[in-house]
Amino acid sequence: MDPSPSKFYSEHGFDSRQCLEHYFSDESEMNFGADLLEFPMKNLTETFAEGHIKGDVLIDLSIGSMIHQLYAACEFFEHIIILKIKDRCILELKRWVDSRTGAFDWQHAAKLHVDIEGKCEHFQDKEEKVRSAAHHVVKCDLTKENILDPMVLPPADCVITFWLLGGICKHQDDYIRNLGKISKLMKPGGHIIITGILGTTYYTVGKDKLHGFCYHEGFVKEALVGVGFVIDRFDIKERTAVSDLIDYKHVMFVVAHKEK
Image (cartoon, rainbow, N blue to C red):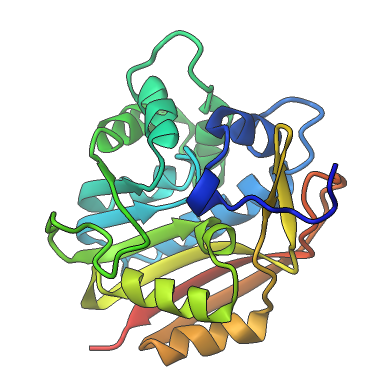
């Protein structure tokens, strides 16, 4: 395999099902559970349990077809809108929403969430609430200044973006510009929740090796402040996964609010 990744998620996309199987499945050989599922889901559950992030509209703008980030959020918002930039990811997501044969099985993530929450009896309720929320899927275009043009959505009380910025950005200016576009989707005082990976240069999906934007903690903090956010929480976990599918060093979980 060429050591220099030449593909970009925003331009070329990837096989969204293979991405889920590589990084988010419950198969015994899947090495990323502690880093990519347990760490962010624990932080999400704790964050929403504090009770100050809630409201009418939550927007999720995440890479691929993942939904595990919505288990903790679905109790706190009237409306959840999922934005996707690739049709293939929308199709994979809808396969799960509609409970079709062969859909990716997220039950291990739902069980993980209710275990963290301490409410194991609510397992089925969580599945149904997330399925209901995931019916609201909208195509967006991150190459545009207004990524929803010509559509207009109500400003969000909260935006969740998981793993996306590192996958679509080629350099620091890209990251700052895309962060600014996301900010425009939010109400003043609204919250952004970001999960990303630090120190990566590539990730692999199937036979494709894709570019990962390599950045560090200090840059993220400066970028958030620079576009008008106040950082409320910044947690980092050192990598424990053993795999050459991806070369990150740390996982980060960030909560910030948009200045009024």
